[in-house]
Amino acid sequence: MNEVGPAGEAREIKLRRLKLRSMRRGIKEMDLILGGFAIHGLDALSDDDLSLYDEMLSENDHDMYQWASGHSAAPEKFAGLIAKAVKESKIF
Picture (cartoon, rainbow, N blue to C red):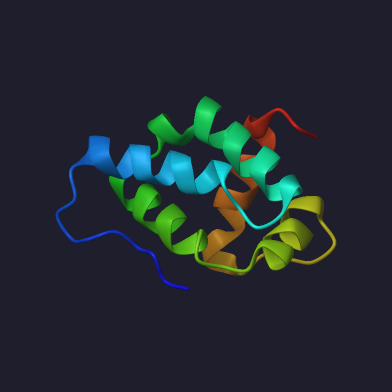
């Protein structure tokens, strides 16, 4: 599932779309982690990091939960975002 937004999408629209996608995941644990991050930290991301976050949201929730919980290593390109999401989600 690839829901990466359109090129040239306005930042405000992109933030709203990403916040909604962060809160409505496939598993409740990721709703809480990514939803919490969307509330507390998404606005502070650079445009490049927002695009990477958008890409990351297309990953499987069970895989992302393994990364967030430390049960497996996140792919290098997502490792920083996962760490930031866990820290800023206020869940762990």
